[in-house]
Image (tube, rainbow, N blue to C red; front, side, top):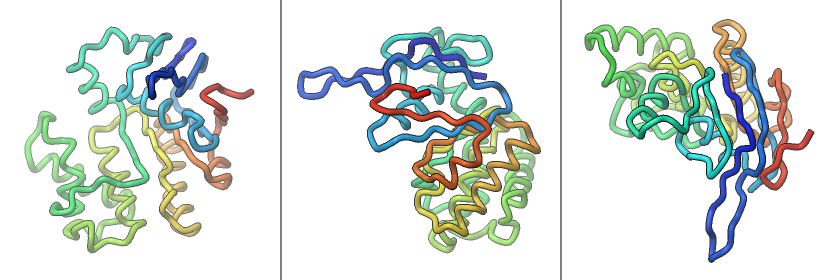
Length: 221
């Protein structure tokens, strides 16, 4: 799925170069559940956003299914983010004035198909994430765990090959964390979607079939 060769991302801060990630060499196969751990500032989120095509690396090569992302125009990168990758974030980023159903439908607005087809898919995804009875609820009317389930359903709206999850259980208690982790596990095992998850949680890290650890922007073996 992903092949990274000597990937580096450098920022300028107060006149000094800071290597957020440095010299990353890595392959993530299709169907893997890769878990990335590391302390704050270790480069975990930078790596995830690089895989998602949100951050362009300063140097190195990143290929997805054998195609280099560096050759993509801005428009093609936007299409890649829309169709190949689904993002699940700690902060959910649900639109507060839209219902759960409408939030899931948002990524499908630019897809082909009728409004009814998009609605039907959103309904199926909410059913899949255990929210069949919450479709008409606004985010403020949902629990934290339910909001994260909506976010996962939204991430799946365009049937992505890979789900990139940044601390998906960071705001949840242990019981809710298990529910979310089991949803991600099912997506990986039953649907063969690639999952790449950044986490601080040792419990969440146990779900990975591939475990990576970053320290000071470098992969540790």
